[in-house]
Amino acid sequence: MNDVAMPIGQLARSVGCKVQTIRYYEQIGLLPPAARTAGAQRRYGEAHRQKLSFIRHARELGFPLPAIRELLALAHEQDSDCARADGIARRQLEAVNRRVAMLMSLRSELERMLKHDHGNRIRDCRVIATLADHGLCIEAHHADGADS
Amino acid sequence: MNDVAMPIGQLARSVGCKVQTIRYYEQIGLLPPAARTAGAQRRYGEAHRQKLSFIRHARELGFPLPAIRELLALAHEQDSDCARADGIARRQLEAVNRRVAMLMSLRSELERMLKHDHGNRIRDCRVIATLADHGLCIEAHHADGADS
DNA sequence: GCTTGAAGCTCTAGTGACTGTAGGTTTTAG
DNA sequence: CTAAAACCTACAGTCACTAGAGCTTCAAGC
Ligand SMILES: [Zn+2]
Ligand SMILES: [Zn+2]
Ligand SMILES: [Zn+2]
Ligand SMILES: [Zn+2]
Image (cartoon, rainbow over all chains, first blue to last red; front, side, top):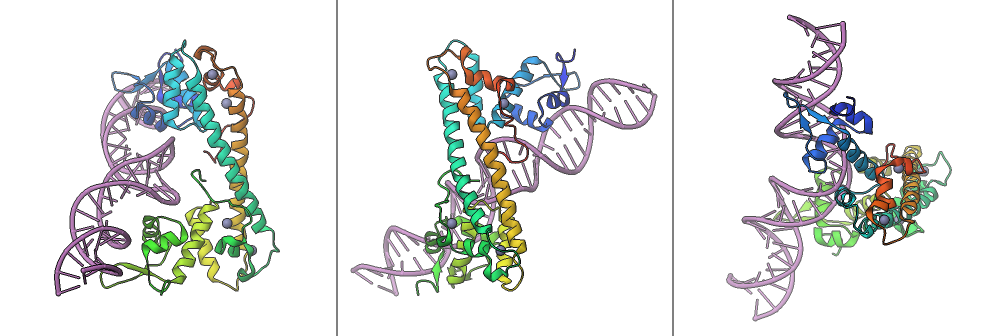
């Protein structure tokens, strides 16, 4: 009786997300609508919990919702080839690789900026000077498609 | 006469951003309002170009707009101590470091997922299986504050 | 001076993936 | 039966832009 008629808050706690997130997933059609009590409150079972857990895990790995939607659909076709699922994961890996590369060069630029004595005046500050002039940068850190 | 009365499109081209971005920065008060022609078109000078270039460079390094707002204000106080500017850059570096660490562990998890034969059925696919069960993950890749 | 096409203007809405709030209703334990 | 906790819907806000509609202005050639 713990899992056959779980209210939304309990489901949220059990997968580690917010109640609103679950309602949002239902709203955008990612999670199927839950059963309702006479008073219109949602009640969930184990199937919902598994689906939501899949979604959250994929989100933690950075997959965007459209990719997750596709992965969920694929997960149900037990007998078909997994090439499409692998392709989605591979694209995600490539996106992660691009972001890592980007962030590493940002990091080294920030570290270089910060390598100066404390107690400087603003006019001698390398942080301000570097921001004002990309010519002072060494790495080509500029974003090309993937940011943050 | 190239830089004393530049229209917005030329300014955008010269710093490599969109026209709308410049109007947006003005709207949120990050960039001071431009001079206008009799017909209400914006005209920019060199001071604006430098400020915008500073903003774009900082954005490319991942600084959020509130941080950039503060850095711009600090840049004008030539004689004061640069500790605050350095602090902002250090916080940005820390944020970048957190994201890099996160993404590295996502990457290794994605690589592990993908290390299986092609031509599998979905039911044997490690990508789907791993997403369905975080127990199959090795690294603690879970987001704690900084995501994507 | 006139025409024309590029570039400009304002205003509004949309992006992704949620998160927060207001104001009301239902459930449940005591 | 009451009171608190949890739930409901609906909408606004986040971040940093980006896109579009519908209109006006500018600059160049004639
Ligand atoms: Zn400094
Ligand atoms: Zn730079
Ligand atoms: Zn596979
Ligand atoms: Zn995992």
